[in-house]
Image (cartoon, rainbow, N blue to C red; front, side, top):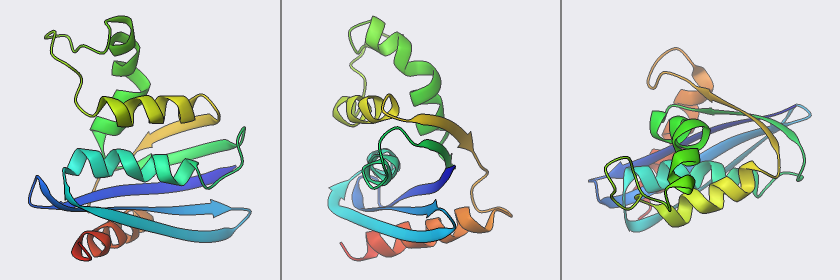
Length: 141
């Protein structure tokens, strides 16, 4: 089982953003991070699992831990209706970050993923660690 912790960060929203992931494969820990100059927090929260999933073998069993209810609820619940409704929200508005959602959806279907929400800035040490990595990445931009 591969474990991935993800987070996104934004200095200003929109503003300088960073994303990060900590990936555990067979006990080996890998950290990845990146960012953009002009972005939003939600975009960074979505980019983190997208980038992480691209680093692991397709078909893997994966546990993803995120402190973003936007990401967890979006990929496990909301996306089904968005796709059924032509990428419109319940309010008939275009889904924000559609390109990122479609990319994450494609990746989500290439793995056996358990999506897990963790409380931000709490007792989960790995969530706190990935949060610092994402903030560091945002600082670079």
